[in-house]
Image 1 (cartoon, rainbow, N blue to C red):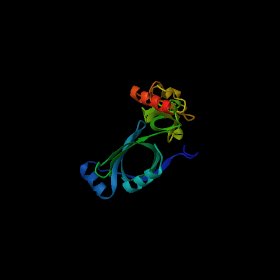
Image 2 (image 1 turned 90 degrees about the vertical axis):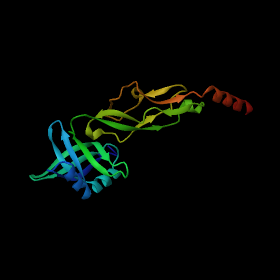
Image 3 (image 1 turned 60 degrees about the vertical axis):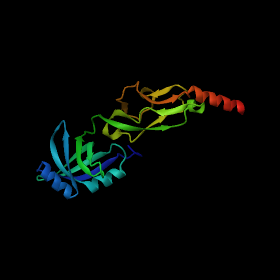
Image 4 (image 1 turned 120 degrees about the horizontal axis):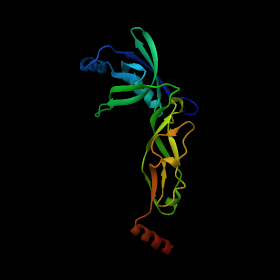
Length: 206
């Protein structure tokens, strides 16, 4: 949740009945991208997504938004809740080429990758150490309503030569780490001997 609001995108899409390179090329000429929706309890559905609408909505969203897919089919509209599993883009200009949506259920935990935000100044840095990030994201498990936009990691207590690990961080309510607890996220490195000697001389000069 972000400020108490579920990060959800409503996206109007169409079921497509033609597959292959030719139809996909025609879709892209119409500013649409081929996509697929699939899940363990659903038959895969081929989709056509308006790329402008998709990109605009994604720019407003946080990380790992939930999608309310409003799918227009020959038999009428159906709604599916999904996460974006994969996005293929053209390297030259970032144009969306293909999207993969995976079905989620609001009462079933899912695993997502959540970015880390490091806050505070480590004790070890105050003493002359160098702060080094070892990981910028971790995998977590939670219900769809509890997907964190970012996980804040307080690094202020890291001593010189020490690290903070997954098992030591405070996770939001309802969120569990799926990454091993022993994985280091950030470290404070002791200065090299020559750096330490220079610091000592500088301190003496003062």
